[in-house]
Amino acid sequence: MSAAAAAEVPLPRAGGAWREGDPPGRRRWYAAPEPLALEGGGHLPGVRLAFETWGRLAPDASNAVLVLHALTGDSHLSGPAGPGHPTPGWWDALVGPGRALDTDRWFVVAPNVLGGCQGSTGPSSPRPGGRRAWGGAFPFLTQRDQVAAEAGLADALGIGRWALVVGGSMGGMRALEWAVTHPARIGALLLLATTAAASAEQIAWAAVQVGAIRADPHWQGGDYHGTGRVPSAGLGLARRLAHITYRSEPELDARFGRLAQGAEDPWHGGRYQVESYLDHHAGKLAGRFDAGSYVTLTQAMNAHEVGRGRGGTRAALARVTAPALVAGVDSDRLYPLAQQAELAALIPHADRVRVVESRHGHDGFLIETDQVAALVRELLP
Ligand SMILES: CC(=O)SCCNC(=O)CCNC(=O)[C@H](O)C(C)(C)COP(=O)(O)OP(=O)(O)OC[C@H]1O[C@@H](n2cnc3c(N)ncnc32)[C@H](O)[C@@H]1OP(=O)(O)O
Ligand SMILES: N[C@@H](CCO)C(=O)O
Image (cartoon, rainbow, N blue to C red; front, side, top):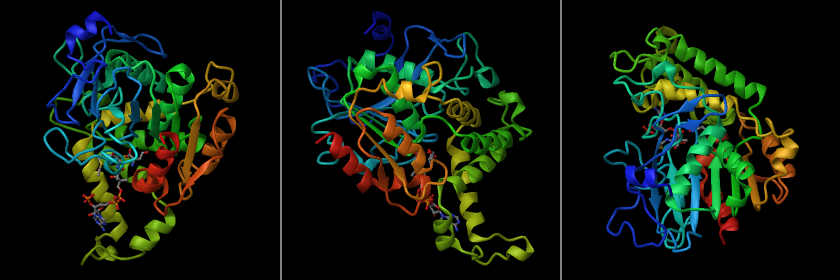
């Protein structure tokens, strides 16, 4: 740990004596001691990552598990909603005594991604040296930049090697980058519903979402923070479109079919149930997420290509030394199983691709916690 980091933010140390009496899941911050050198050029000063932990770090720091969230997730992996946590933990069923990530045994760390808006530095954060938010001046980030920031957090926590790194979707992209960039720091790897590189179709869906946000007159080139006008209509449209891709056609049909929402009449300005459902998800996201972060993170996902500058996908994946499991969701139309099959085939110590059975599509990796727990238990017996 650098002296500068230690001086800025009180951080836990290996040894297990720290944080007696602190409730698990309390959000903390890591402040990077130096500006972060970015893959696309330039530096990002003042990097902070919000993170939460559960369990206790062993004296030799050998029991740490890193969990990396997806696009609109956060550091609140486990625990109830409360102050600072508008929603309950998004993988609560996996974390706790006796659960797959058994907190009597494992020290679980969940950071909020760099570029996000749930405590980590992102477009809505104050720009160092000024009083305004970064807004549209926030730099372009890649998954590698985000992992570089997370590596700084690991260093500061005294964690040289993770017993397991696990992530789904965008979190899976970062888990993969961890395993390729820092193979010696990974004891085991679990990749869920993710890919070696964003595909043309994934970029296409994402581009329409970014376009919807930028078309909102309140976007103002990303410089809307503090103006009282927020591009929530654009963000809501982006979420509606994204949410369709996160679920499966049979699920939507079985749940909503052609039914009208309550007493509404779709022939006379009313909505179908499925429209109301999308409106609900749009409103929820607009209430908890920053549009600038949505754009930054979406662009970083589009840039994801593990083979870039490493001689291609095959050569990059050959760097992974950890035993790995790669799983996809059978009904996922956004990250189809072929992408996970490719990863499983090319990662040297990966088992055959595993299939999470779910009618829920891509979101199955968040919903089918029993099946995900079984995969975690294979890697952390
Ligand atoms: C719970 C969280 O939001 S976790 C917070 C952090 N967020 C993340 O980590 C992002 C990942 N999470 C997500 O993307 C989603 O929230 C998921 C995947 C967890 C949701 O999955 P599911 O549990 O299957 O929820 P589902 O898509 O069925 O939506 C349920 C909601 O739709 C609402 N809904 C269902 N039908 C309709 C309808 N016809 N009209 C309006 N609303 C409807 C329900 O009332 C429910 O509302 P609530 O979530 O406010 O209680
Ligand atoms: N529903 C997930 C999907 C992204 O993988 C999220 O909002 O993060």
